[in-house]
Length: 175
Image (tube, rainbow, N blue to C red; front, top):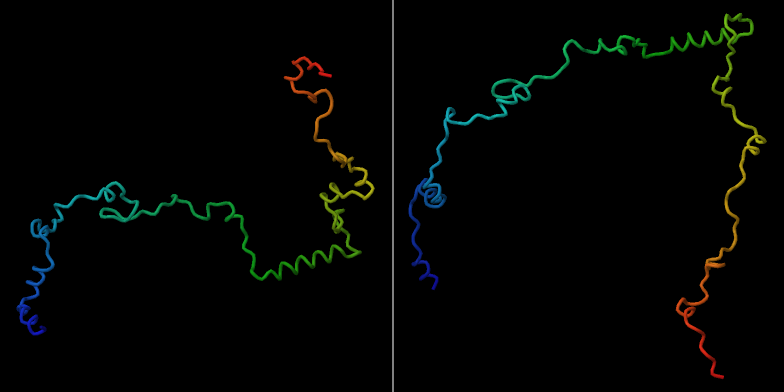
């Protein structure tokens, strides 16, 4: 049987690569509508290139960086007022320490009456309260007293009989 099936098979034909491509890799749509490259003059215009000139780099104009005219860091007050101090602040620290030591010495005749201590105007204005003053400022508690509560109503609002029983006359006794 295998010999018979082999004899039925057709022997491969010698086809070129273009023939194989044409037979196996083409569609009827491609044959009916052949693709043609559009020339540059026939091609449409991209409206982003026309209407967005300068907003991005395009066919007609490069991107224009937006910046305010004649303004830079030198026009800002912070930049003009800023004084660059040395990264090593040892000279400044030494000068402050020398001045503070001189002013705190007992024989120094100061031109000001300022005392170098830890008191400030804020501390003087907003001082803390003593324990006695704090106890006096405490108010009486408004919390209700703990105890059992009644959940059933009491008084005149309590209905003792149904309204339908109140409208009926009392039943006569049979005894």
